[in-house]
Image: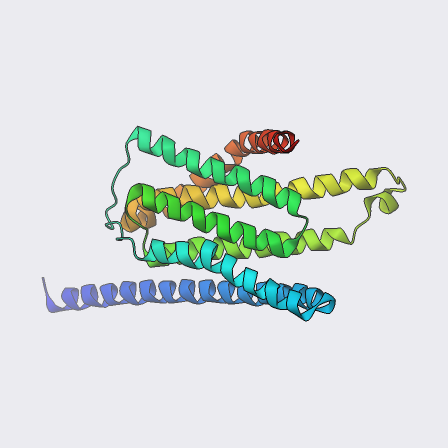
Length: 267
């Protein structure tokens, strides 16, 4: 090989490395920006609720913040720490048996069902955001415990950012729809109750779909490893979107069934 060929080979390799570093840096910046935006939105909503509670009694305001801190520590901070301190999966991945994959799929479906029920019933954007964050983190934690390994920190950050940003967008859209009175809009007073039910179920389905996609992505991370996943990222993401949409009708039907059974058991 002549010196010119060697020079151009090294030059091309250097450009590829620089491009890869720039892509990773851009991704990190975008993820950090999304997380920051979500944190600002959540804190703003929390302060608004706390002010309303404090107007009733200052002690109720203190109690609200105390309960919120305990819930955040129990359902977000502690599971996150357990995930981080779990050994990382090898970049080459580790295939799962059919039985293990089936069990992991059940975990994801169950989490999606629970998110559907809770966010359909809650009727509160801030509560929906907290519910989605805590239940998705809990799901990821259970999957990590089941596998005994965790994805890379970058992959975990992407999962968290996907849940947080999607939850905020869905909650914001839900609050915007609250200002629309379908009965007045269509001139039919009886249709407004049906509109509220439809809006609530749509909100629950969207949050459930996010949970399904996050769970399926986490599973692929935990099976393929970072190298294989990144090598086939577009096709894997397309497959996850397709499968998640295909599974949603069954998840929603089971969520409704479990919700009805839960109400019956209360009486």
